[in-house]
Amino acid sequence: MEQPDFNAVKNWLLGLQDHLCQQLSAQDTAEFSEDNWVREGGGGGRSRVLRGTVFEQAGVNFSHVHGDTMPGSATAHRPELAGRSFEAMGVSLVIHPHNPYVPTSHANVRFFMAEKPGADPVWWFGGGFDLTPFYGFKEDAVHWHRTAYDLCTPFGSEVYPRYKKWCDEYFWLRHRNEARGIGGLFFDDLNTPNFGQCFRFTQAVGEGFSQAYLPIVERRKGIPFGERERQFQLYRRGRYVEFNLVWDRGTLFGLQSGGRTESILMSMPPLVRWEYDWSPEEGSPEAALYTDFLPVREWL
Image (tube, rainbow, N blue to C red; front, side):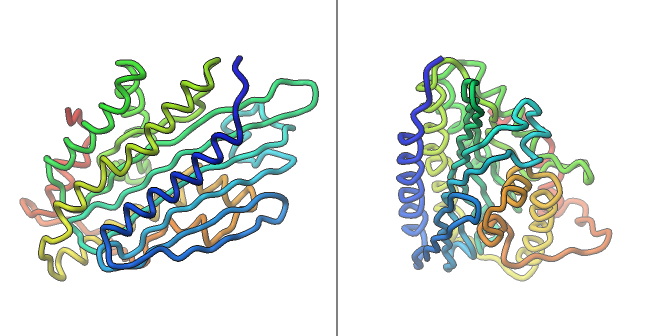
């Protein structure tokens, strides 16, 4: 098996964080602030947050952490990793726009390596991106999935359907029996004898995010909205919080590995609300999210 080039992955991730921040700040009137941090036990990262007029809060984080034992969330998923030291690094972003007509979005690319004396290292890539609209537009959903399809196609005709399905299944709120959004791509445990091919696919996903998301931002950020739309946005943000705190493996890994809590919970929206037993009025634009966009479908 081809040996992983750890430094090449790290350098690319650092460059990706820079690139994403430049592209997002170009859409807004504000710049990212940077916070460098060191993890007790090994590693650290740099967190960047933008609070502007287009993006109420956008965070783009790089982290590289290592330790002597794998966190419980990782060994529960991969029991064969128990007793190994680990290194984990990645870039993650979460964008909470101000305008309810601009979707929330999340992307992540990551690399793990686990080692122990006398054994070959175990490594894998993971990542993906997903879209969480409040007011859906078919044009946007098709563009989002078409971009995902196009970046997957050079790696095989089976790649997009497999990772689209995995995304639909992963970002599912089991306690609500409801999708978080309209999906996208999700992959994990990507490990073949060809390290370079795995790395190139991960690069395609990380670099493809802005091609998928920014045209949607440009189309929707100028649409007028009122208090009704804002309150629905804040209500639906509650689903985002529920998923991240109850089901998301990345959040659990970060907290259990002793990562920086402020950076891990950067994914939380700055404002959110819950309302007891609320449902949208039948035939309303809010109801259309539930009937026309959240049910899993083939957008292409």
